[in-house]
Image 1 (tube, helix red, strand yellow):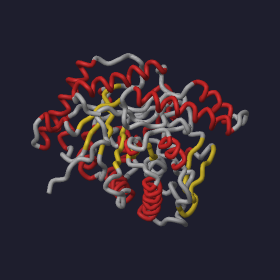
Image 2: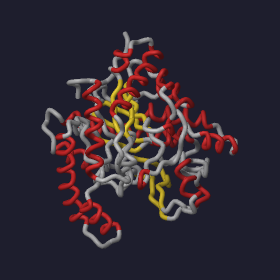
Image 3: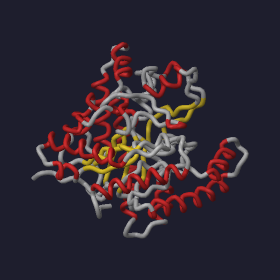
Image 4: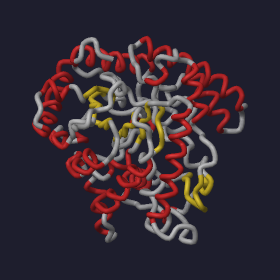
Length: 399
């Protein structure tokens, strides 16, 4: 029997989770970061800000509502520091990092070095969810009938592995090989997902620029120069994902968002088309939906979508969150049709059938880093309105 795509979620109009923080929130957060503010004051302004941004999303017609990631400094949150066996360290030794990984390269080439990182220092164990309170608060703001549509974004399981040179991601006295380390990461993810599922979460988006970095010819050349097999490493990451998701319930929607970097001011870190990873990513990664960056030529063309199976969804990130200028909706509609044609050619369907597994969104969040991109609140609203309008014109009457 043919597999069917998981839908509603995803929806025809999506966004990627992070939204611009209000100035009042940033002011208090910066004060707390400097040791000049109180956590209770920050929590209070977070609550108020989340209440407002949830209402904004609902008013704009979005169903996969998020909390804007307003309680986070960075998009990945605090999953790894919350695990036993991981430690956040300040001013790490630069020699532990792979210099050809795009975000590491971007900082070091500009004369900077990572000021902090999180690294495995002991046996990994899940000891409590750092996402649960965020989810419960978001859930409390929605009618019971809509809560299953709301979205929570999670960190990528290999986030604190790719960046480190071989031998530096974990102590050899604790894990003898990547397989052992990954097994405990996967167990921690399965535990986390079950906790969140039991609390009512049904829509998960994992944010993973690392997978998109395997599209970067510069990074692949760096691996080759070091005598390392980037293809085998990508295979191990896909297996890690599948192990993380091996016990998820059938009604838990999981998607993975790929982009090439979205730091303060909308800075990107890499480029390269999906051709290099499309077969493995689209066919072997056991997720329901792929949220793909497609706002510029940096991500290449739609040709790799020919490898998309008919039971998986793609959300096309056609609208940029990096600058305020609005895209032409006619051009956007034409691009959606071109993408649909590639999907149809690949799986032997019609354009109309291919459109049933597509949706649209911005290419990334508006504030992957809490300080946000070079857009204002009204710019963000207009971008989200454009996403909703584009979806309505292509899929009228669909959420």
